[in-house]
Length: 211
Image (cartoon, rainbow, N blue to C red):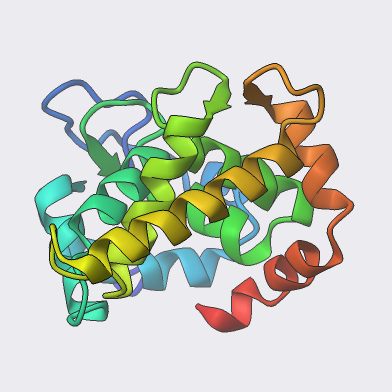
């Protein structure tokens, strides 16, 4: 079936199983609609923008970091962008396909609180082993502080104070989430703790407008 000029995504949209050097693979638009909460028209619009910015059909990590740097010019966004990139890169190929981008955006913008929490868990589970350690939580918290420009120059008294505050924050959150106090946070513990926290629930419900 011929593709209308305004619908470039109708016959090919994203790669299903990208290799280490991913190439776009034809996929029906209907399949993208089934896998996400976007309409056909929304997908077409996003695909046109995606192909304009990423003509090779995938987003590389360096490009992803450049995007974050533009949005957070007053901080060091590289580390946080790295963790977010890994969470988007579901197939662990080293590049984000249009499908991966679309599915993740669907989760973050239109997903339930439960779905968004599962994605957040993936972000904090840095090594992808199914559990969050205190070290992993600390790494992401530090990355957020750097992203927002809250880290003082290394070695300065202010930096030591920042580190102490960050450690206190990590300890407090980790104790709250590690329900059985065994030193790791499982997905079940993460979901149970966060779903009981009205503040977290409210912030997730507002995520679509924040973006």
